[in-house]
Length: 379
Image (cartoon, rainbow, N blue to C red; front, side, top):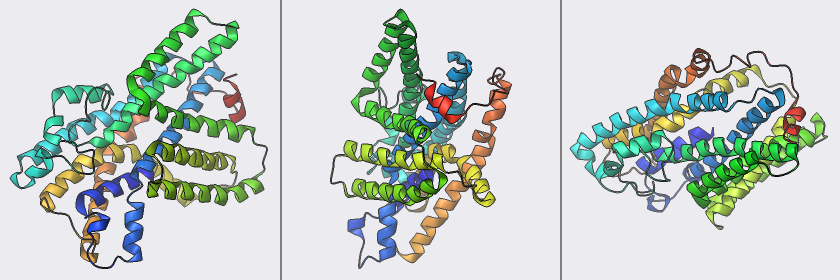
């Protein structure tokens, strides 16, 4: 859902006029569409919380089972990232090159792209930017490659993947030895260097990322039954909706609203983790299918829809009338189908590639371990 909303916002921004430019009266339906289409940034905050939940549990589980290995961990993380990123970079290069060759779409590629940080596609389509994005240095030492501004968050994710295990190992070694050791100093220096390199803004994102770990810890410690979890569920949703409304109004600085949204979503995740009610089979199948190409949708969509904008309507943006809203819906469907098709060849093969590279030889049949044991393993 979060990945779809990012796509939804980008389609709105590229193809439809801003809210203040809508002619005539604005229906409640249009107001709702524009409101929801402004939540793309907050959806990235949701990505960070979920990533922190899944990755932190994976790291702690490996420590608890005694199977922790930097080599195996990095192999898993790099396979997961690169199996989509590499095709995404080459496809983005292809779509941007086609767009650059279209005279009618020249302004989209040779002038600052409004509402996307004023990125200049023609200047960002360089070999240096390509290599920088390949090693997750976009927005740190180089711009996101070409038109694909969405890639900024992958730099955050990659360095968070390194930061968290380093901090866990430093804490565990400090407790194990009862004081500072060379390993503690080494991991501490590494973590400090990463924080210095990524800067204050991305470091705040790591705090939000850690909220996923907080949700796991809190859910493991809460002694509430399924009845209470069912009662807390609507309350947690209401808190999240309120935080999104606050963020959407832009009454507070973006950093503050990001933290508020992160906390509220982490609370919702905490309640989710306590739910014991079985999910409907149809929902489970749909969730697995959609989640199976959400990363691809996020990475692949922006260069593709920018090219569609250059082909369909390069000079101006549409009013949100019925005919153009229908066209916008068609663009959404086509983009989702495109991402799904590519994901079947890339993201959908992640487990097969991991097995081929021997990534799960040591943990093919791990013993059962409870959530509480995973969370407590850090101590």
